[in-house]
Length: 466
Picture 1 (cartoon, helix red, strand yellow):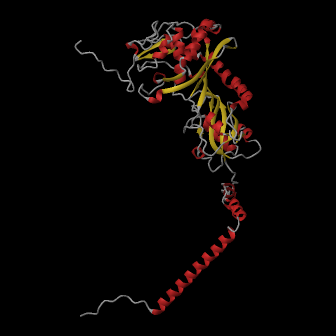
Picture 2 (cartoon, rainbow, N blue to C red):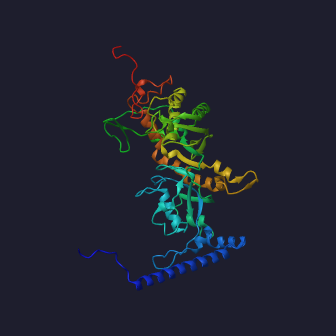
Picture 3 (cartoon, one colour):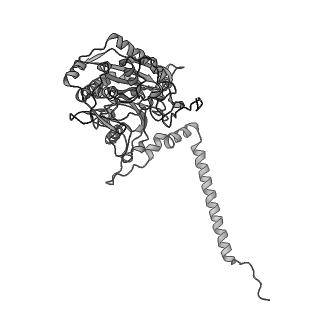
């Protein structure tokens, strides 16, 4: 038979060398372990040494100080500044902006704020190319053209210089202001930490003048005629004449009408189903149940001879278009002499078409952080642990900004473009039965009901043959 296969045999000299290497490696590991043990024994010998070691190597400050600074484009190293989680208090006039929230390709409030924060050094250049890296969150979102006397953003930012607020504002247009900031705990979130919000709505009192139906035309007569589209039909409405505008500017609301308006707004207080006061939601949607804490109609104010009303609405949260539709429903019911129970009926399951009052008059007064502020104080020790989020600290500055950049701009816009006059003209000249719920009985007739995928037409309980 052929030669038998056998296991490979390693030459003795190779085996000997391998054993020597293993012995050396083992001895080295043993020596390293001994050194580490000695180091640890020395490091943790006393409580003071352990504390000093921790402060020097493991604290957040030490880790940030020991980090290598990032290199700038020109090769120099950028200094790494410590960041703090803050609530940034801001205010703005939303005219010319497509809302507050960052939106690629759109001009937004947050985009201008982000650029200013970067230029002031509050956000590092490493994060300057992407706003998402700042991971900020707003207490309340505002839509296109809506203003805010106060809003809050939560973010991490650095504080170079001796006055970071001044530096940020120097890079902002005058219609956007940073009021100040409050250092918060790291888990603070502006949206979820907000308990409630106060909005304000401004409107000219002349909107309560009785309906004035205008003649509809199939052809445009004047260049500035209003266009009314109803289905496939197009009509044109003449605008108010200069004489009519003068009459409206001299209008003064009666005490009776003002009282009725206050009564109408109070009907919104409490928890109700506001599905008719928003879009894209049905009566069965539980999220339509919203809690309104208070509504207040202030005494009239006069600007350049024109009477205006201010309405404050304090609610836990609001849905899209909710406030504008609430204001509209109150106005329309009063000027048409419809009983105010129509507002209560609108909380029912029937779906009706409530037009939106102009966005021009709406502004966010401020978000409220009651729970956060309560926890910022140690009630047992009767001492403040953290500063609360409080806009009243900047009250005088905010009031001056409101007068110059919000109230004044609203008044100028209305005088130039008659936005509220257009709104009421469209409603007065509306065709069809959409607004037939504005009647002397205060009931919603079947012809006024609208059907959507969120509110399907109810199935008849009667026999088909009856």
